[in-house]
Image (tube, rainbow, N blue to C red; front, side):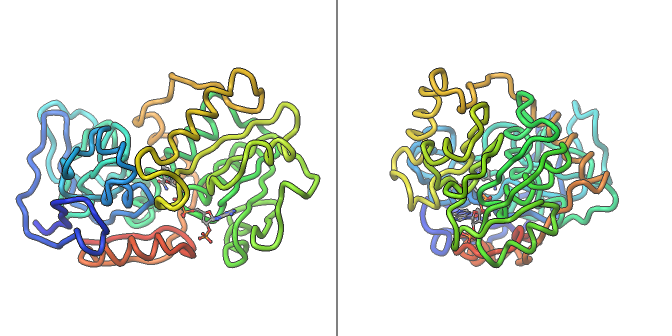
Length: 337
Ligand SMILES: NC(=O)c1ccc[n+]([C@@H]2O[C@H](COP(=O)([O-])OP(=O)(O)OC[C@H]3O[C@@H](n4cnc5c(N)ncnc54)[C@H](OP(=O)(O)O)[C@@H]3O)[C@@H](O)[C@H]2O)c1
């Protein structure tokens, strides 16, 4: 099969190559999926470049990538199933992540076929294209588990999404509206119209205005762009409000090469027992299977409509990552084999 392959960590432009490789062999609990569409997100860049370095110790591979084919989000057709697979059969249209664990490693999605544990997949809703379905998994899992996890979002609440026009933000806006919140989306001028069209009640242009200086207060600040300080956010939160940090450093630009944004996350976790606006660490996250099922329901019900910016062929994955990294994409970037 054709696949994008990397033998070493480095810039996507220099380490990624289109090659012919063997089709993956499925395990007993795995499904072989013929990829119809995959998508690009910032964690793909982290896994390809091996930065921050700590991710290499988290399973990605210490000296070189343990898995050579990048990409984690797919939609496609089930080609065959392992002996223990009960939820899918050949011919099913599915979408999901390619792994059940965290995303900071290559997942094999940028290829014609990929093997996936059955619990990372859901059936693709009929009215959704493969491209739309492939744009949802990782961003949707992050948005849903952080917005809804622990009963965080409640109907009638006022929620501000910082970075509302990006991969995670466009889904977070729609989910927050579906849960009955009043939503304010913050992003650059070019994305405001799209954010409004997704249902946001109010939009703020970060290039013209600092929302923390407006005097308005929110129940939840969902910081996807991750450029805010806790003290700035406290000014814009009601006393019982919550600040949730989502983003990692901006492609290595904003944090250390070794640990990335982990020190910032750990600092907030350490402060959380003493600062009521910080969420308490939760060790009972819903499983990927449960979250994928909820995302599929939102898509089916028309409460979540993926926004696609553009589509690249498999051989142009480096261009697609470069375009993502440049910012400015209005919606998700898709790869088709
Ligand atoms: N997407 C995923 O699946 C995923 C999964 C896990 C973690 N994350 C983390 O979440 C973060 C965001 O991911 P994403 O996919 O949503 O990235 P993204 O598509 O690049 O979205 C970020 C959005 O924030 C906007 N932004 C930039 N500076 C801002 C500012 N000062 N104030 C408000 N908005 C600003 C960006 O606009 P411009 O285009 O103008 O810069 C962009 O629309 C990343 O750090 C990523 O590592 C993402």
